[in-house]
Length: 242
Picture 1: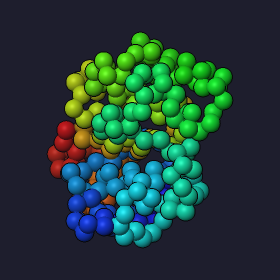
Picture 2: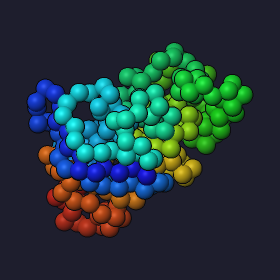
Picture 3: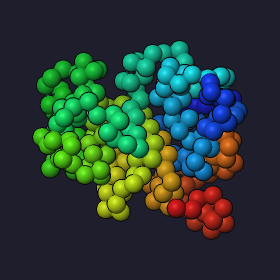
């Protein structure tokens, strides 16, 4: 479970962009939760609080508690959190460390000291489950943007985190690969993994989410069951346009 308890954060440079104020929300195990809103409203800040980039990388003024699986994020190291929380970013190239896809898929597991036999087994299982067998043993830089994002998702999922945060994973992809990424998110969630999804493609994201939160200038202005929000025309027009 993930809990935000009266969490506020202001980046060190003093800009109001991305700040959040008095956030209280709970994400239950096994849920897909959508966070949406205008650019700069604080969506990415929420993901950074969960994966520990705030406060361990991005500095600023932080109050309140972010509790992930019973632990206050500010009291544990990024390394310790990496075994619990995985992250998929908008641009997969920013998180690649290998030139080949199979090496990249194994990278997180190597960092977590997972035994070799278990890694081999997990790679096969992940490739089959996410339907990315044809992307294995390939030159990463010969892949399309959508294929790179599929490998990024697979690399994170292969290490078996309890939570995965995804920050605009379908941004800039063709419709075919948007569908592929959302299929992958659903498969990841079927295994019981909790997914926090930041997305501009609200209609598509709502179709797979359990709940949704809408942010405006750092505040939650709307929340509810994803299917109910998806079927509310006034809500979609005001907050959830694609």
